[in-house]
Length: 241
Picture 1: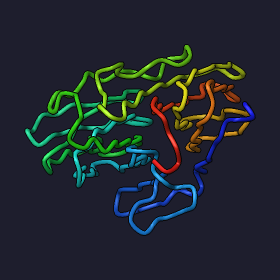
Picture 2: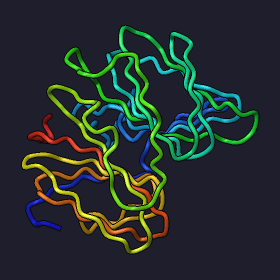
Picture 3: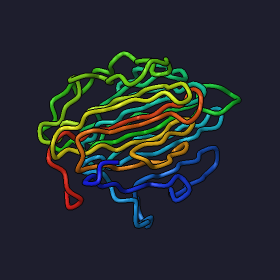
């Protein structure tokens, strides 16, 4: 790893776990009374949750502030229903985004009567200067194909002050990849499946790693069909942000 680079790890086993009837939520970032040393949000990226729903169960997404959400389905099927009643069905390996404002809600539910639905919920505090469609739900993208990193959404979702970018990739064992990082930027790495070595650090499933003060991210898959997510904040970053 570059000697000048800096990193902070978010271990999967230190996530906050909230469990109710038919619902289990793993919070990577601090929420409520949860305040682990390595649980500070990444700039305006304030939500990174793994959510598991039993058959027929659902969860309402009602943020206190205008928020962009990214949903990646990791297992099973997931139903999406917005305040207008529009419904879309997402399958395993699909990712999509939606923007919630003005105290409106979205319902995410497991449409089956049996079996689990597991998905990753990412939330970015959008504030008032967010440039994206407020109502359109982009067509789901399948991320479950091998072939290295590719960018999700492109420039379709961008915050004026903090333009996050999302990259995802599925790798064979011992396959390597490199990701350049703008000067002063940072990247949050999250392992969806399998294991990776990233900047000489071992990351297993659901571990996170925040990296900054480097120009190149180096990664190697340590297992077959390993899946990794990169959330890039390509503007000057510091832990005080």
